[in-house]
Image (cartoon, rainbow, N blue to C red; front, side, top):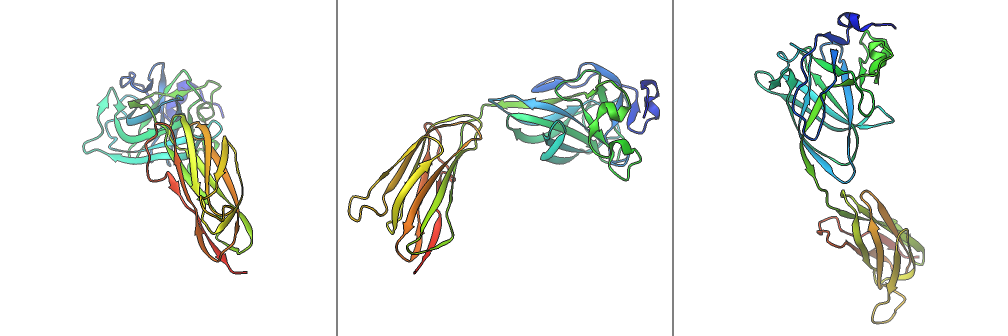
Length: 325
């Protein structure tokens, strides 16, 4: 398909005319290098949808309060309701949905040189994301940008749309039928959050065994926060009705302390020094025991780290039903 920029107004995905760049930059802005036209991103044209990407840098979180996509001249007045979607990245295209909201403001959304000021409420971890803003019902043209930051913007018109070249996400160069790369004009408002580490402990064991059987259970320590946790420690109190056999860990080291009274081969406490856990990383402790007494056995495990505030998911205990042989 061939399409020159001069013929852009005749193309169903393109809105002719252009406005000046819009809102002031805050967390992120690419409102420079305005292009000569815009692309439809609205439900009026068979759910035509545009999206462009941005990156939250390592070591921080972004608490977004507003997104400001820039529209072409005259295209904002009728826009009262929009769908805002933030996707994760999937090999250079929008992937899974991270955030979505439908925003309606009586009398139309606030406009600043045809920039839509759309309130959002989402905190994003470091990573690569895609922003989509789609007008609901009213025609709206999202202004293109003649320079590319990160990856090229994308566009689609899913079936039954008549533009079959981009039924799914495709690069803006394909959508516009040119060899040039294109982005979209927008900015993101909000604040930078200095993320603290946060810990969570999982405990997994078989549901049932027979007395005399050896079995293992796993304690998984995960740093779900945005910064490294140091001095991570797991302490697990074994039931007195199981024989301790061994313990291993994917990080750091573990020791088992026998109970103060006989039989010292049963029960006891496993203590593991896991060292540091980077944001998003995990370490697994595997404890091997032998069931000796029918009944339900439950271990009691806890997770701590230096300077990390304890909360409800720092403890765990897995239950196993021991049947008689």
